[in-house]
Image (cartoon, rainbow, N blue to C red; front, side, top):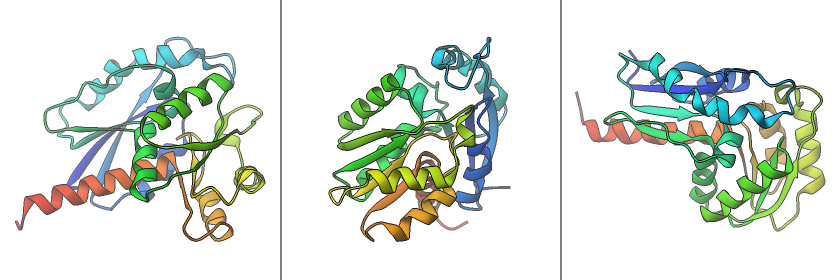
Length: 226
């Protein structure tokens, strides 16, 4: 049995988070998945009207974890977190990590001061995320919205790399690829050697994994020897 158990709330159409996160966390971390599905699905991948109904589905999605002894709950939708105030009811002894707060955690952990923010968001969502990052002590030097045709998951690594290279400046000391639904592992691997060695390149899924790994280490260090 894994020593650190996580319940992950993931948007119904998000495949990237389920594919990436298990490979980014320590093997002692077990992840249980529950999908957030709005009552009425959006007409297309650019329609943000599903965000609030999707948040209304949190209690039902959380009920899928009934009977599990969880150490943490992960909420995996950066754009919904940016646009709306909401709460994930925590269980006793169970931490709650969100994608956007994990991006702040990652940037501040390396003392980043000037951020290049890249995400597949509309103008309102991007502005809302910038504001939350700013309140969290992270300065967004520039924010770039990635275009996509149908679904976020179809954004290619090449498109991400091209956008970052085009908009990166020497003032940036961190690149945040925001959106758990966007595949980013290959893009991060390609970008890291192309940018200054002291520039952090991370994503929503990588940041969530880093925070889960740290929480797992903290738990293990405080348990003492068996």
